[in-house]
Amino acid sequence: MEEEFDGYVTATPYTHVYYPESSPAFLQLATFNRSVPFPSSRPLRYLELGYGNGISLNIHAAASPGNYWGADINVAHAATANSLAAASGSGLRALTSSFEELLERPDLPQFDVITALGVWSWVSDANRKTIVELLRRNLVEGGLFCMSSIALPGFGELVPLQRLLRLNLKSDAIPGTIFEKLDTGIDLAMALQKAGSRFLAEDSFAGRKLMTMKTADRAYLVHEYLHEHWKPTLFADTASQLQTAGLQFVGCARPLDQFDELNFRPEALELLASVDDPWLRETARDFLRSGHVRHDVYIKRNEALQGQALSRPALDLEFVLCVPTSMARARNITTPVAKLGFGMPPFRDILDALGEGPLRSWRLDELIGRVSAGGIGEKELLRALMILIDAEIVAPAQPAARVVEAAAACSRLNADILRRSLTDGRIQALASPVTGGGVTVSRIQQLCLLALRQGAGSPKQLAEFAWKAIDASSDDRPEDRPTAAHVLREVLYFSQRLPHLTALKLADDV
Ligand SMILES: C[S@@+](CC[C@H](N)C(=O)[O-])C[C@H]1O[C@@H](n2cnc3c(N)ncnc32)[C@H](O)[C@@H]1O
Image 1 (cartoon, helix red, strand yellow):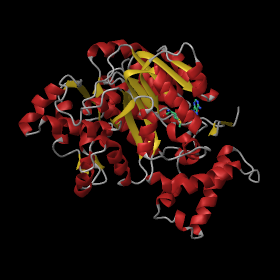
Image 2 (image 1 turned 120 degrees about the vertical axis):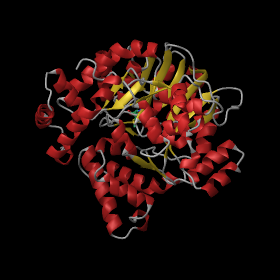
Image 3 (image 1 turned 180 degrees about the vertical axis):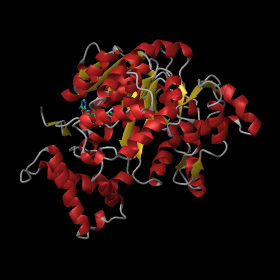
Image 4 (image 1 turned 90 degrees about the vertical axis):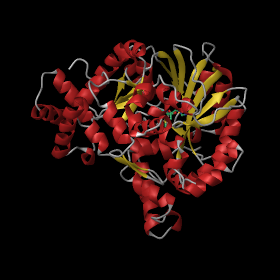
């Protein structure tokens, strides 16, 4: 295998993590929250640029049916993505192709949605230009572009550390595989930290990032930090480049990022509100955060966007609870300015409503009727739902007809993912026809689903089945191996969660 393609490391594959931000369901919520129309064509025409192992792309293709394409330069990625696509029968076309080759394909159709997560800030200027040209030619008017990027000024502090790791990788004087060179680079930076480098001091942004590197997933670190063209950019510069393809910024793809009051202090909110120019305001937001990976949604549209904050909720949106109410109520999240406990109103009331009676999807208007007695208004309800979605406690749900349409491909894909969990625990999500996206299901929970299918019943039998599989897998790093106590906890959690997995149609045949 070639070691690099135009400065992008291809010597080792990326992680198998599922990212919900680019799911049609999340994109619909992001556009809805800014009163922007979601592309209405069905089947949805969807292209992912740089799909990695194709975990997210396969899950979306199965769970939210449409005409899905993907392009990635790495042949190992294409092999994994295509084997999952063959299992699900979703019709996904996961091409082994560079962006440039893709642009030249005469059969490349028009798309309603194009996504590029983990790509923009990690590829060369020439590739960024190719992406812009693809958007200009192949994204329909009204179509959406979802992308992630690392922004200035926060990530600017990391430039010297990234260059150091890259220099170490390219040095002929340092032998070793890609992972060994990653390690020697991190070791050198750590030695510099200990020797008094103020750029890498423990309380600096770069120093803090460095300290997380020793235990982080190494496939992730290679793809995050070792490329030649790693480049944080100012939001306004990215928006200006995308404008040349007719794109306008809509808003953030991650639910929590869509609410400034959860991220900034009152004086910062006042300051941001006083900045009229949208690019300047969005760029200013990045000055208030340190090292935040942006997940943004753009729309291709000639007219200026009028929609600002949500005016009136779409009452036919649906939501479903993904975890037991008692577990959800015990949790909380900490944002830069707030600590929100899910055992308190309005979260408590919403969780109680969603968990009431036989588990099912709830329409927004039903939920409004259910929680309004507690004094919770529509906007507060919707905001709380978005926070619970960000925490993976609640998920948006698809209309019943689409659940039926997606069921068979999801079931086949999930059977393949469960089969893989016997020997390797890297895919920790299953495709839900109910949510139209992926739901996090740990390897031990997946093994429990398999054990149930094979007739196991008691927690002891489930735990024994899981242990046998974990023991037989050779790819685990010793430090990643779960302890007996962890396995038991997960098995007990699984038993409580099973009704939810069933409601999400992840456990149909157990
Ligand atoms: C960090 S991964 C992101 C994977 C996936 N989007 C995800 O979020 O899981 C970036 C991907 O872009 C691909 N890539 C980089 N440069 C490319 C190019 N010029 N043409 C096609 N794919 C490219 C890499 O092989 C890699 O799989």
